Image (tube, rainbow, N blue to C red; front, side, top):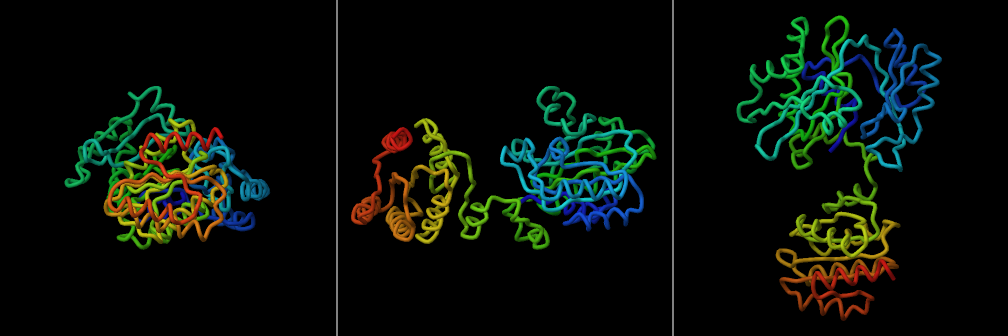
Length: 387
């Protein structure tokens, strides 16, 4: 789960991580009030969406006066902000963060994330902070400092020293940097984060170390331990179909293709998407109904796929183990009866009660195309696309 910058900074403050003074605003008038509270110009007005690259897209601007702040707030609130992370469709900005301007001496990059290869937490830092950190990682990876932390030991003084020396932190700033990095790691661990990122982390001309930006992602599977974080969820920033799917416990991710698919198991789902591409089509979604899916979940997953206007056909690929083939077939038939199906549906299934499942489909009277194996399914999907 992602949260907004202003929400992340609320958590930063709890861990004594220095951030600029500021407040969120939902209207231009609220933005002016927030600027007045800061009592000093310039102020920075920052669009709040779940995507990076806001500055390059025109979503972060400096205002030197009240009139300029109001003008910029009117421009940003309600704009369709397009960045390299939003895609061409962009995101509508519904709120902004109004913050004090800072005298910046130096910009750095700092993040923490789990490293699956080592089973440790990884601190990544770089002196090349700012908007182009992705370019730095791709073209000059030697500029990235990587520090591995055993989660059972937690962050130690030598980790702090290695990061500080790698970033060439001056003696005047090193105490503040140590406190910030230690607080950031503890925040990461305490809240089961999948990412915390500060880009940029700035050193001001008066030698203060401040998190100018804040990004946090959380492990969805651990949210039951953090009810306060679950309340930060902003469904306006999520795909409506993905939000609906989550209500039914269906693992669904909307994609840009033309063939919807429903599978039980993440590995089989990835293989099915490969099959769709090899057939000359593009997957319209990732949908893992899971091994414990029942007819109701199948029905809801089927209905969600059909709501996507890009879908020209559907491939259902099920290996019946825990989820029996007859249960799947009953769910598909029930969904088909309740939904206006205007696209071809190919069903390939194997496993427990497969013959019963095929009989349910054949007796349903519905225009469902059955496939005997993966190759047959791919060919029939290809025919849908080219036909």
